[in-house]
Length: 219
Image 1 (spheres, rainbow, N blue to C red):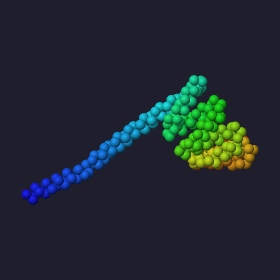
Image 2: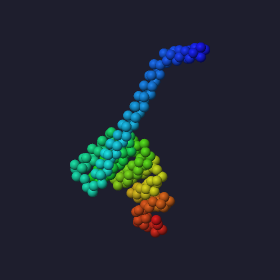
Image 3: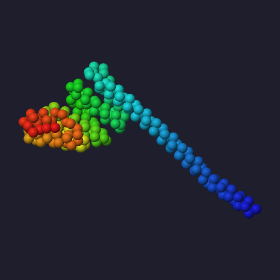
Image 4: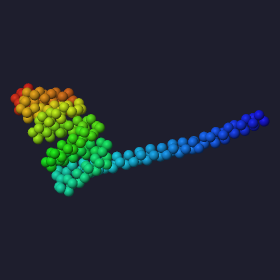
């Protein structure tokens, strides 16, 4: 009988606990289930967005690989860049699309559009390597536009070590445009040294040094 009373007491305790806590428990389970469902839905959405961005970028890449683009193809490329950067602006594809857009603008003799695309990557990208690559390409555009001082200023920004040889090479071009040949020579020698250290040949530097009369220049 004592055991029976104990069981009855336990049952009554369970009933009381359920009466006091059952509703909150159910609510908690529902919220947890909704959270799992919501997270899964969000993951599916993100995966779909990434797939869409990738598809658009592949289309843009295919267009940019053509030897020449007619007006319709160029407009399609512009539309793809706009769609990728507007709808997928926080993805890697948006940065890559802007870099491609800059190259296409240069091919179509539109340096202003190229600079705008590169500056967008520099200002907005969270990826240091791509920011540095954009700064390097912007500096080259500035040298070509007879703006060597602006190029040197661009090269003062953060540029990853992997691009250090190219930065030194471009800095040499800027100094040459300014008529500062000793500084140009030093920059190109630095570019040579860095390219040797990294094992990545930097073509054209030796010729630049030779044109300055540096007979000992070797790669």
